[in-house]
Length: 352
Image 1 (tube, one colour):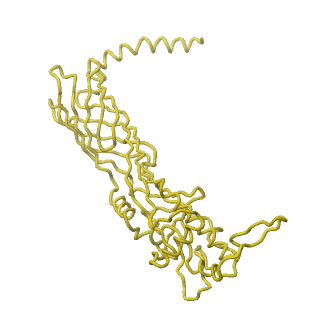
Image 2 (tube, helix red, strand yellow):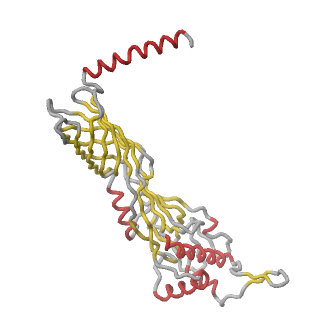
Image 3 (cartoon, one colour):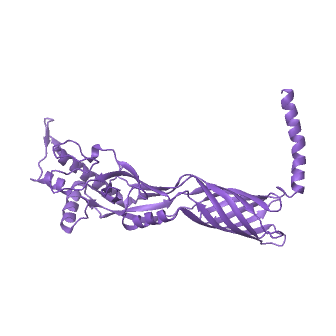
């Protein structure tokens, strides 16, 4: 070891004990509290140490337990809800193709995925009173705080939607929907009822309507290649906090303590609610040669349909309006909460 390194470690081991003794005499880092927390950010653990007579440092983590809330998206064709006759015909059609009963709605299971690291500074502004404190600090964690995925029993309906859209695309392109191979290995087009292609084209694309873009056009979500639909809620990774706390002892020796904290965590703006596989649904004009639901107008003789257009990832809180149903209620609530109300209870014990 070089002489400079030897001198450094010698000074480190010589000075550090004296610094700790001096710090403890001044009331700095002279004891450590370990605590368990329960609150609106979930459950967690933290440690706390004093810095002088009027300041306390706290750090730790919280995790939100998993629970499930159910919402749903409706299924539509051509930008309109099914009427009774269309619903019956389309259900019969998809039952013949898939062997399953198609539902009118897709249930979505929503779950929190929230975990936070925290660093807080408690200031005791009242002399000789360690009950009340003002808190400043921050929480930090993954950007995604919640997710939604279709319920298991919605998978057959989502598969039927994708199958229908595949048939719709083939009808728009003039391609054969069904083929079979004869004994000589020759492929043949299967016969379909007369006018079947035109009927599919008149029905239009099938999916889950989300709302309207700023230009007034509709947003339509379709299942992904795995026959699933999903969404996620995201906020800033860094989240400042300000609050007020009350502290009291639970034992005569003062080692067991109870702390109650209330305050506000700032998102840094309204949350994002992202969904994938979204297309812009163009308005249908009286001229029935316009059938496509893309970002451009196309005629029947063109060989491009919505499956050739890259779907979008949109934010329901910013990119669209008029989101309906329970999902719309969730989005409206997310828009209002640019900050998150906080309330927590901490049980702690002094270790030294």
